[in-house]
Amino acid sequence: MPTFIVTQLHSLFQEIPNDAISSLKVPAGRTVTAYADDNFAGTAWTFTSDNSNLTTTGNDNVISSFKIQSYLLIQS
Ligand SMILES: [Ca+2]
Image 1: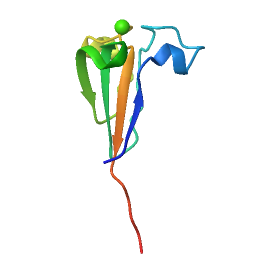
Image 2: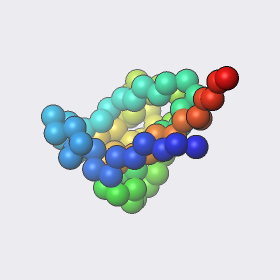
Image 3: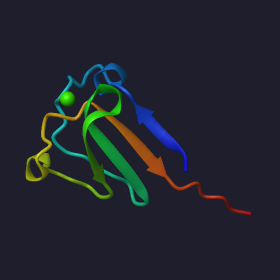
């Protein structure tokens, strides 16, 4: 399963400060694992669908890194 990784969210997207995410959109079939600290450290949360308000799951303004997994689709 291919995985897209972001070790430091605020380094990849410099317009986004650290600990500033308040919502997520997760495309169908993908799994996002978000971490409280850089480099996949600290508390981890798994998302398989959109979350428009991370305060409801207790992780507003804390996410610093994440991994996005998706299934590889092969057609012939
Ligand atoms: Ca953090």
